[in-house]
Image 1 (cartoon, rainbow, N blue to C red):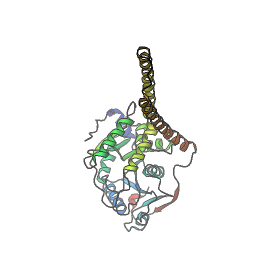
Image 2: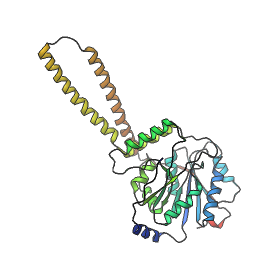
Image 3: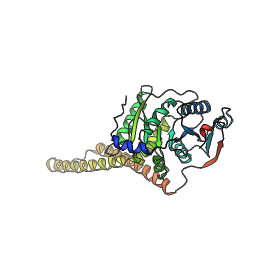
Image 4: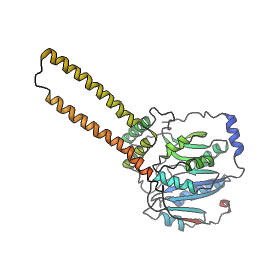
Length: 339
């Protein structure tokens, strides 16, 4: 279980930030969706109900990340009369990019990021917004438990955070989620970060600002099947490591130094042994094992280096982070969304 640390922001700073909050803020809700036809309309209705009850003006933004089911049809043909903006990406770019697209299309004073599958409880949004009004620039969810996950995934996640935070001055909170509320200043700051290989949890943390963590129970998916598997998790972890840590490079540097020193020591042992006992022809198995071992280590270290070079290659091409097929706005029947 991960328990959030008490806030270290002074009450005076929070009061200054709270005084800057608009009297009637516009709240943007960004929902990235990939094959979420079973959940998307109900989530939009639920968000609208909670925000309307709390008296917030709001806009609902769905970012379709190249869905292959009828997610787009569900959004465009629902009969609930909600004002919805559909940002349809030209293909599947991944959740990190879909979040980026949603942030860039959001006009609100605060932006809510929430998954479409109801694993992030919509009823928590108003609690997050209360903390935002109190002066926090970023309010984010932290999983209160990972008991519902497999042992392998829990160990992998713990190893990832241990590695990415090793030697780093800015520690990425373990078990932090994308479910959060961002002030407009944070949204603008994220928009100034041009990298294409985006690890959003790292970018949120790097941006700084006043942050507050709220423990949240992650629910089961309401409907449909998750497309996020262990391979997707591994790719995201690799992106995070190469974007925010040089520890893998330093590990191989340290390992190379250890091997070099060991080789020198071994050479001294051989010289002393030869001077004392002569030079019998033996040790070929040891030599063969050493050559194969060092060859494998060299290939592995080249692979690690290649991952970083590959990321550099992708960045210097300066391709757009994503492409939008079309943006469709449904006017809705509710004046609550106007503004």
